Length: 311
Length: 305
Image 1 (cartoon, rainbow over the protein chains, first blue to last red):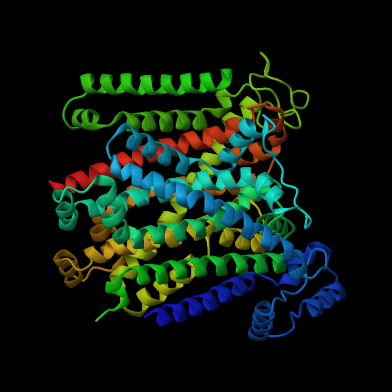
Image 2 (spheres, helix red, strand yellow; image 1 turned 120 degrees about the horizontal axis):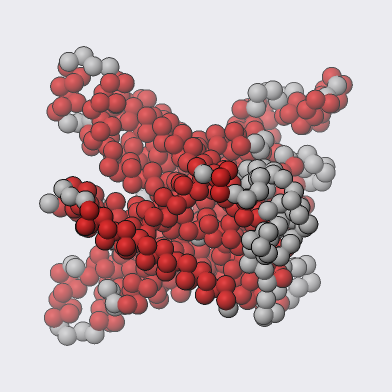
């Protein structure tokens, strides 16, 4: 069961890589033409084609690109000729750090808020949480980020720009990355909280919960011991989806806080039309996205015995 | 914090006007319009009022704006004054005028994009459900593959390839969003194509286009309309984010996302002006969400009866 799902995930990843590579083939001319534009002479065009390996047929180029990517060699940047793996190197770690930081903040908070909202449903707390969630979903990330900058960075408590270098200690990193992580947390918490609440309330109507209530158990114990284990599958799914969402949220937030991560690199590459870098970063983001969805599926299978031991 | 107070006051005033209009509508209308006005929640009437105001501002922008959209009319980063109610921007253009023209550009482009995504996505989705077989399989698997890539990342990839202009922006976002619309339209239509009246129409010898237009579409309209509102929000936020990143609507066209980006330095000095365009984005998205929420509630309520 799980092995099949993982095999499907790997297959999907392969198709995704095909789409990312194949997108460049949509160009009306070819990459060299597009890069040089009007100023192209036949000689420079031929030289650039040679340099980019454009003279090979597409399947050969795809194979070279994919095998290179699998070994960590993404080729060279078209804008400055540096190896892409060197550009990505430290930034990948920074982005992963930011995403994990945001997840570590948002997952416990949204679970607790969701459970409380389900426990006290239709109370003032529940309504406030719901209205807050709907509003937070509607806000663009950069709006949330700048409001935080205006309120928190103004007071001098937290820096509004993140300057990280390899010598930064872990504590400093946590402190300096607080505002970006908080922004991401505010953006994803709403959805996770609402889904946790919905999943638990959905279960609260089932007979075994009624039985527990009739036995005289406390509402908190019913929610934690009886409803939550059965609500885990949908909750895990939503958490994974939101972590996957963090991947795209990270791009905007990194730009706001001048955070040295992959998102910033990708945005710069898009404005330079540095297709090689964009392809590499897109592949990494898409792989993380597919992997997280795969993880969600596997975990929700494991938490549900009926799916695990299907007859 | 005087500014926060005035924002709260402004929102309260909007709610009060929405409430007054709803009460007025209940008193004046009769029949169906009256019952509609009767069960509309306050949040939804607030949403409708905000949408109406945005539409008015977008249409009447040249009359409302004190200065032209692209003209440099003062010094850089001037403070709020009588001549320039919201000050001037990075190169001395009037902020208020650009904010007003932004309603036309940003919302207009987002609306056009959503409409395009809907036409393409819905027609393909309904067609796939109607024809079924290998065409359905091919289209669905293709869409699945595209949806495995996060939307923003895929848009960035496509924008790199085709370059950044308003036309490519519209086409790229519409293409990415059409995949989501396709999924919904196909799912909805699959329940409809097995109905007897579709079978009857097929036996009459009607073509696919007629079936989609006259038989399936009217029955799939309700969920598609609610989805249109939600999709508009996503598209609007996506376009604003891309413009904010400098990859969407390009200057000198006034646009809310890039206005935030261009004047962001002011925020670190405690000036709220650059937040106003972002606030305009947020307000419209909240308003549309309120209306969609009401519509979804209404649609599900009708089903229960």
